Image (tube, rainbow, N blue to C red):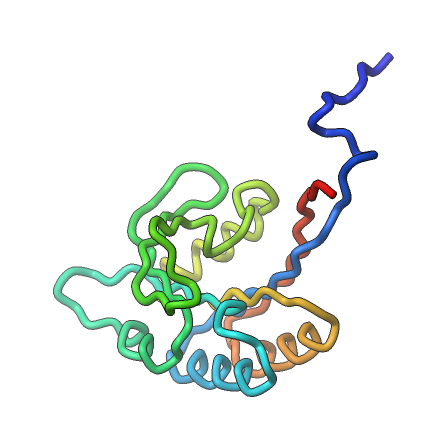
Length: 172
C-alpha cells in the first residue's frame, strides 16, 4: 500500500501551471539580432527574452558580445562548466533594468532546467554552445505569442528550435 503524500505536496491544495519556453539555436549574430527585433515587434517584452552566448576565449573578440547592447535583452555568457543536467554556469553579460536583480543565477536564465531537462536536450544545447553558437530563450505567455515566436525562430534560428512546457506547482 502506498503511503500518503507529505502534507506539503497535497495536490488538493495546489494547482499545476505550465511555463512554456522556446529555445532558438543561432549560428550567426545577425540572425539572432533580426529574430529579437521581430520578437519585440510582435509585442514580446524584453523580460520574456534571454540570450545565452558561448564562452569567449581569452584575448579574442566575440561577434556575439558585439551585438549585445543592440538587442537590449538580458544576456548571459557561459562562464564555466557545471555538474548535473545543466552543464554550464552563466555570468550576466548585460542585464536590462527590468531583469536586473542583486544576485542573478542560471535559474534566472532557464527556469527549472535542472528539474525538467532530458539528457538529449542538454546534449544538443551543450554542443551548440561549445561550437560557438548562441541560444535565445523565450518565455511564452499565450497561444498568439506561441505562434508568433515559433514562426520567427523557425525563420531565423538556423541551428534549431526546441519547445518546452515546464510544470510548476503553485499554492492557491
